[in-house]
Image (cartoon, rainbow, N blue to C red; front, side, top):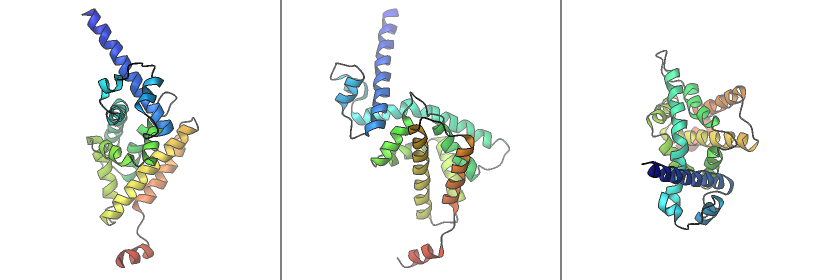
Length: 215
């Protein structure tokens, strides 16, 4: 029994080490700029099949990074949503934006490269699939639905466009703070929420209305 627990603990340490090294390298060089050999060597692993053993493929390893980091983000998002809903009111646009952004902001730290990795996935054109999975949890759906309802006066394709813009802006803004080695202050995040809310709910201009009508 003791020997089995020891082997399991060692294997789990190896798995976590590979995940955290992969996250750091993906954050620095992007998904396509990193090979499995790069990750294995940086993790101090000599067995060429170790990543395949634990994760199957490179995509499997990327999924494992998300599985390693995202549950804590989603749990904090859920706690925020429940706190905002305590008074019985519907989730406001600002509440929903805080619920999306603040848990990600709270991951910023020296040993956590999750937001920086998301930024690289965005630049690599790989973020949309990950974002869709993140917002498909019950907590993500509540926030996403509140944001969509706040923009319900707009055409559906415009809502989709603006939500994508807002989600990408959240990642870019937080990644900028991460690159500067700091956590955004409450005042800074609040000002960003102001901007994201305005970008989401602003009415269509006459110019845009005319351009859409002429399509």
